[in-house]
Amino acid sequence: MISWKKVLQCFEEADYHLLNTSNLYQEYWYLRTLYRGLRADDDTVLYVIRLSDVPYVSFAENIAVIVINDTEGQPDSEQPSMKGNAILLNEQKELSKGFLNLEAEFHNQFKIGYIMQKLLDVVASDGGIQLMIEMISDFFKEPIALLDTTFRFIARSETYKPISGKSIFSDDAHYGEGYNKSMLEYFKKNGLLEAMLHANAPFHFKVKEEEIAYYMPVIVNKIKVAYLIIYSNQPEYDRKDYYLEFLPLFSQMISIELAKRNFYLFNKGTYYNYIFSLILSDAKVDVEDVRMRLNIYGYDLRYYLYLLEVDSNIEEIKSLHKDKIAESIRNTFRNSFYVFKEDRVFFLISRHKDELLTFDEMEGWNMSLESQNLIGAMTGPFTDFADIHKHMKEVRMVLDAVLQTDNQKNLYTFEEYQTKSMISYLKQEDISLFLYKPVLDLIAYDERHGTELVETLKEYLKYPKEIALICDALCIHKNTLYKRLDRIDSIMNCDYRNGTEIMKIELTLEMLGK
Image (tube, rainbow, N blue to C red; front, side, top):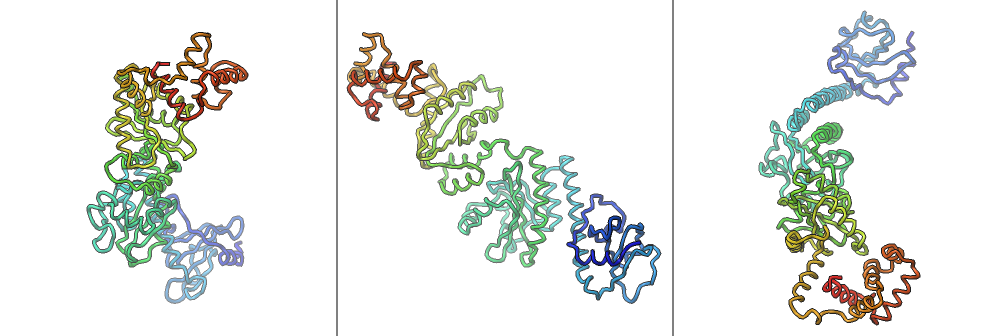
């Protein structure tokens, strides 16, 4: 026998939760019954129901029912279908005050369950993003759109559109393409752009205190790939809680569809395509704005920048997938991303102030390019995006030059190209005028005594103060290295550790082909 004292205590003290039914085609009473998930004892489940619905319901013996009297007058003392398991509460009772609101909330829960099932059907049947957006728009009875992370439209509702004078997105041109420059400037000025870029949860904002938009980021594999947005045509109504409650559910469904279609890009290199294309365009670039966007996307734009172009027209790789090749290279280039522009592959690499590229890194990159049978050209460090077009010309000049010659390696720098060009010019004159005498003295000593002091000097300049690396390269003991360095000091009689001296030494060795 059901203990009604326990039932009432359970009902009054519980934190109520509404039923989310998985089967949308169950009997009528599911639509009009609020299930609290409460148990008066181990075998008793408690329901709440309107008295007017009682004739349509038949309950099992383990079901306890609280009946809300929504009729005029007193009901019949007995309802055959209740089997003695019900207790009646009149409308004036305090316990029943929130019943109408709770029932409305239940119908919303039923409605969301229905549309979620339909959205899953669309995903399973390849119905497409546009159909999903139309369904979500119909649910809210408001204009809906899906924007990518550059704030351009992926899809938008056609049945419901922003109403002129009631929405900040009433201009068809804006609605058709995405946020124009003035809109983004307005958002940035008011701190909204940064808020949108950082958002990982639903949020809303007002423009001019009366126009409202609701946003929900769409996340795929922990990468933010899009925004689901409601343009409110009814800003006079406060529907914030209603919108923000259901947006996450729809965002998850969109995420499933985008992931299924591989809409998001599998590597972060191509994920930055828009930003890099903007940098390479003729438009003036706000460095701090780009830095903020890249930071949100997970890329740390540091102080020094390097531009690398890889020749993508080599015959041997035409049959291969260019994205896979570019991604393979990017994995070698720490803190880099890439973009394809006019069949050319550009990489942007950045480093901290005290983190200039090392010889080892350059060697590793050369090996990476060699493994793919590719040739690359790279600039020296720069800090201003305004110089990007000048550097694009530099790397193209280098590639055009080295592709016409027999390549001895796969990665060239613009500095190397400058040096070779200068040497080529100097060789047309009396080369002896430009050779550094201390280097000539060292070469002469090697020739007379059969030593390898020039090779030792070259390795030392390659790995300054890295004794172990130098010894490994020369296959000698460190004591032997110290003796050789002392001998070099005495022969050259110059500070070969000084930057100016190093330049003279390397230029002379290059001119002599050493």
